[in-house]
Image (cartoon, rainbow, N blue to C red; front, top):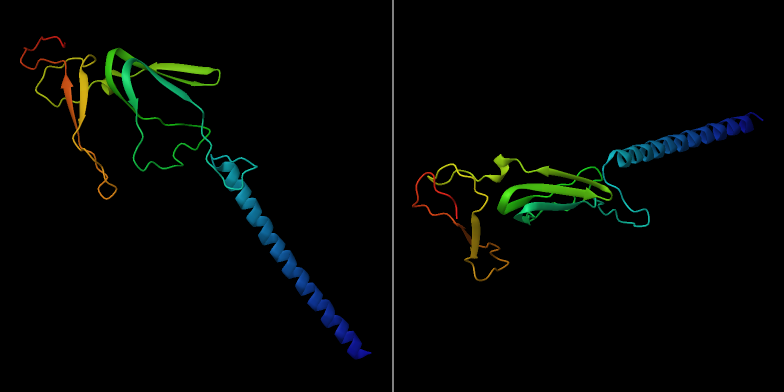
Length: 176
């Protein structure tokens, strides 16, 4: 009788140990799920529930620059996840020529906004010994100097020059 009582106690202790282990495992799993869920909710990335692989989602914003010739830029090796946010979007551009102070407009669905580009961002850096003139009408021309580009040396040399300015004219000269 004593032996059966000891066996029952040992079995009961073993059962309690296994229940404690199961409870600890469940706590770890629950904590992990909570941490991952909280992290996903706080991140700015959203994924399609039907897709097993999380692809970045970005704001479908449309940009336009008015009163200027411009190019949208893309960095070589740009991070794929850079604009994967539903709260902000970045689009670098360069203004080539403007007839007056350019404006940038952005639209997202029915929402629309437009702002003038600040003059200090439009005017070029003083590279030449030229008077402080407004450079809206200058024409920037580019010539590709590298006839072929190879993957072993992925560089392109481009010559840019300013056309439409007579550098021999005096201080009060108008741009052509």
